[in-house]
Length: 79
Image (cartoon, rainbow, N blue to C red; front, side):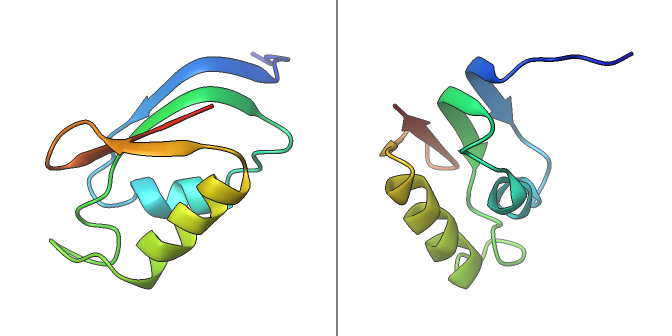
């Protein structure tokens, strides 16, 4: 099946350490996502935050998102 959409109200992901890598590849100019919730604690390895985490935060802020923690493991990025 093929879907043709470019706007998403809420995008939630928890893919056990791959969240940040996936979001780094997502084109925020192509897909308009109002709110993204993702796990950040394993962004650069098990229980490790580092350069990938920093790159994603910069990408999200440069794309107009405001960031807040929703739990000790998750961040919400909102427009």
